[in-house]
Length: 162
Image (tube, rainbow, N blue to C red; front, side, top):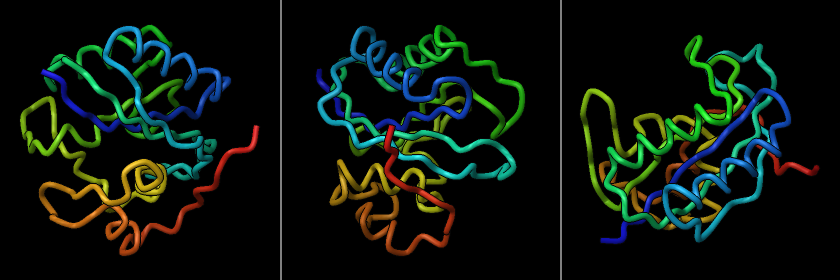
């Protein structure tokens, strides 16, 4: 069965644009087919604001994988691209989050979908709105555009010009 997942990719270490390109290639190779991608956005660090800016990109992925298998594929890609988990919100060569998986709501010890902090993060909402602005959050029952309009996060999110 084919599922639609929305992912947010990010990097704040190394050649960020190159790493995001490698990430897209690996996702297409191992996890499914990217059918839409937002622009790259340079975003201020959230949670630990003294870190370098991130590049972020939202992706719409069609996949045959179930959520837990997609998460395992994502972790394998992160490992392949040099992700080292040292501290929460720290430096990272690559970070891949599952934002939505269809309209499913999942709460387990290892996976929470939709991502629990979407409504608090402009760096998620701006690129997601570019590719899925009218998509409705399955718990909050409002569109991503509505979430962005009400978001109190004022950290910088600008299209990246490389």
